[in-house]
Image (cartoon, rainbow, N blue to C red; front, side):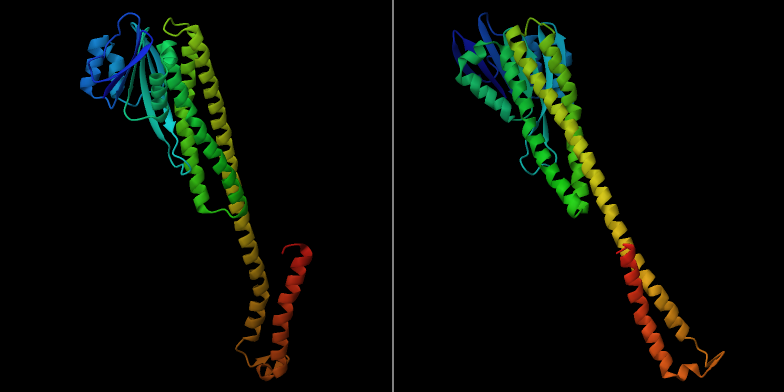
Length: 324
């Protein structure tokens, strides 16, 4: 679906459909948005704007890396971002935005609704001064909104990391380990996208292209600064995840050691008892110097006394050694 936002003579006009899809007349600024593109719509863009076939082909395959390329009379910009899934962070949804930036027009192509993009559209539709600052400023509003949507996701990850650290130090569970690897996967996915995007914004702010005014370049540098902060936060959270994983493994190892220690103490206690019971359970009527020894009641009391005295003595000895 095409929708068009145009600024002419200080007035904003809105249209839907293909009638106004094309380069604007002199003195007019035009923003064309294509959502849910197909081959026929992309071919229409190529014909009316005379776009190069390569960026049109990129728009049909949403697996591009963030990049900035120059084609004839426009810049082709690919940016990616993540939608905030709320508190239940499993795998945030990634979205991809393609933009053609010309001197007097901006063409945006994306598959589905993006909250930050819709907010920028409503702002531009309600405030002619925004579009009056140039289509490059609208491009800034879009990229800034896409980047800022990553901050709540990182805040959610940081909060959950604090909870995970407390959990693994008190009572580590297998679900904690699974959650650590899930968050690590999220951070790797974000780093894979946002790290090259920082370089793209740096190029857009510094290259001195005529389609990006110096006034707008200042704002793009601000987006670059946000991306730098995001990448630093991702690296910091990855370090915290590594610490949480080490703490989990250490806690599990410590717990295993405690279990083995308890089992070893029990084995040490029952080992002499097994010897005593085995000795008195010998199937011999006579021993040297003890004829008919199995028929003496006193030996039974001796055995019972040893069976009680040996564990008590061992426990006292273990406590004095500090083993229990």
